[in-house]
Length: 333
Image 1: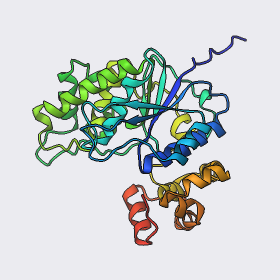
Image 2: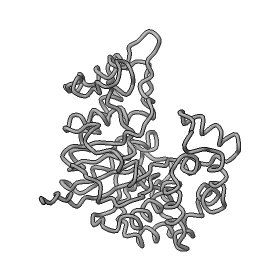
Image 3: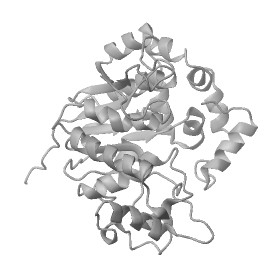
Image 4: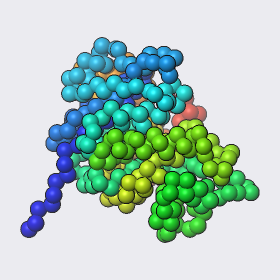
């Protein structure tokens, strides 16, 4: 039987900085090391350097966090915010790409992600980029008198000389948000971070500074990265079908975003992974410094949240879940 070609070695990067993200970075790294022993690439925590675009120093200087990351074989990757920074921290995922090794395949994950399975089992085609399809129709928000989804998205494809029609999911009806290429930026990948990052930055700046007239009245904060991302992926030959379903945002990773949401809606297996990778004393000593992890994971609040919901009959809108948790005074972020 012919053997299936193995994916090339690749690097993994998340963003880290002082505050919440440094603790999530420790948890991400601990989950990767525990659940993906076959991963042989480099694991980077990209950290913005202090500069004029930050009011407070964003660098990680907390020794226990740095020691834990070192023990987890993490490479700290400093990068400079030349464009974004504190005014738009989501831009970190754009600017950090310039600091990664050129020409080496990469996978970016949001830091609030758990690796729950063997990452090397994911059949990445690094020539065809893609991103997370676990999303809601958050952007754009058509107004009563138009323009609609099609006109707004087409104006962006036209601005960058891209073929709009080939991006459409024709199984979805006209003017339904799922018809149009739209991703969550919780993960994305490509064969070269510099090529991807250059285009991501170029597109984001054009959209921010000189948007098509069809976008008048549309908010780009915090959606700018998710508006530019599908255009970048489409321009590089990728799309919604570039990665088979069931791996990322499935058996191999979980983008939990907030710990109460994880306990409310994720699988028993995901909760077990979280609690197992957070259990070693040297990991616990660091993570319990962060109040949402301490209260939700270590002090049992997560179990109380979990008991409030039936995973087989969750509300269709996430905001309903959030509101119920907040009403019970169990929400933490």
